[in-house]
Image (cartoon, rainbow, N blue to C red; front, side, top):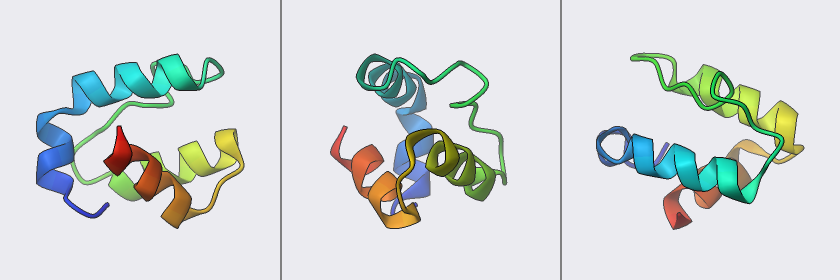
Length: 62
């Protein structure tokens, strides 16, 4: 992720926006665990059918 610290700081708001935008996402899909950012990106890639870059851009634009 481009700015992991910034995303971590606002993650509760960001995950809410992701879940609103993509109703197919569950709480466990957007769980951000320390050191597991790549796993989160991978999970979102599989659920949303987007590339890593698309996911990163999507998150940064929320």
